[in-house]
Image (tube, rainbow, N blue to C red; front, side):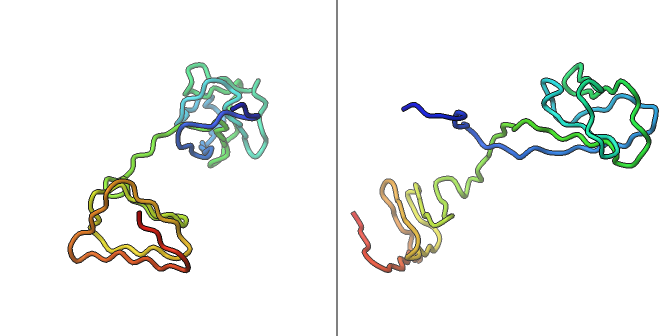
Amino acid sequence: MAYIGNQVQSGFHTIPSVQRFNGDGSDTTFTLSQTVSNVQDILVSVDGVVQDSSAYTIPDGTTLTFSAAPSSGTGNIFVNYLGIMDTGVTVHEANKGNFKHGGMFRTNAQSMDSNVTIEATENANVTGPLTIASGVTLTINSGGNVAIL
């Protein structure tokens, strides 16, 4: 189906970050913590003044090089990363296939090893056979119908 707008992203994204440097009035190069592809990927300010991208270059993707040395100051150079960074999310083994968040309960586990309560305001979905271990309680607080198929 066709849609208008940006393509849906395939992974988790972080919000843009900020990096600060201390100017000393003589150094013109600073090492970026993230690799950028061009000067439009960052917004640079010195002493609170946003710098035109013609005032600096990034020749190798990680070295910010000013055409003139920024003034002296503690944390007076701000680099705002504008691009969204793709990062992977590693799910903790205990949470794989099991989660209860935002009103949804789901388990893919073959065996439930801990007590669980599903509130009347939550939806529940279980895929595959579910075996509840001995001594474990599954409580369903229903405000209406409960269907077990």
